[in-house]
Amino acid sequence: MRRRRREHSAVEMQMGPMIDMVFLLLVFFMVTAKPIKPEADVNLGLPGMAEQDAPVDLPDEQRIQIRADGTVQLNEQTIGSADDRDLEKLLEGLTRLAKSSAAAKAELLITLSPDDEARHQRIVDVLNVCAKAGAKNVTFDQPSTEGGQ
Amino acid sequence: MDISLPLASSAVMPDDVSNRDIVNLDGQGQLHVANRDVTDDEMRAYLKERFRATPPLKIYLRADLNTPAKRIRQFMEMASQAGAVNVIFATYQR
Image (cartoon, rainbow over all chains, first blue to last red):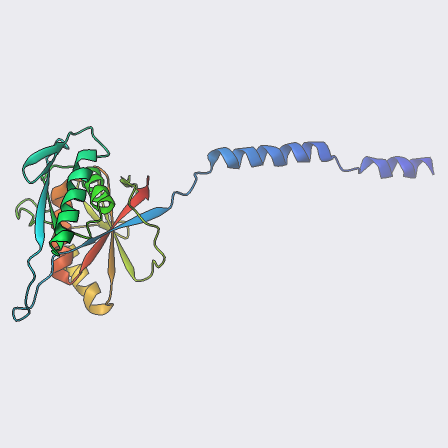
């Protein structure tokens, strides 16, 4: 009778180490897991072809140049330095132009002319400002033809 | 594909991500489709075929924040010649 009791107590489950292990695994996965960063869209229209017979309303075209060092120019006037991320002056200028285009019942068209070596982030910075100013028609000028891969 | 996307405050989360073709463009200007390096000529042929086979198609360009503008414009010209009317730039929301 005594013997049976001893055997029964020997198979008792040890919960302490198991809980330790579960917490250890939980902490490991929390530390090593990378958060998923959702991607978002910036939509850009491509230049299309207009039919020859259709009447064409000439848009009010403004030109933004992006230099290789990140300097931004609006119609040849320097309006943003390389380290100016928010481009407040460009926003002011574009907002004013958008209002004057609306008053003249013309469509504001912005043509981006980035230097070949300008960085993509700088283009996106300028697109942000165009969106804030309410410019809906934004496009790129023609690329240089040589140097493809 | 290890690409650092640019940050954009004007970016919007898409409601519909169907019918998109993803093209990656790394910081050196190399084009990739489905983890495979492709030349400009291969990309032109690929886009032409895709627009012929499955219109209307949206081109989703995952370009690195350091990609030179020249390569972005060249890609946009390829897309335009293949029949695309717009290109979606992939970004992270700022």
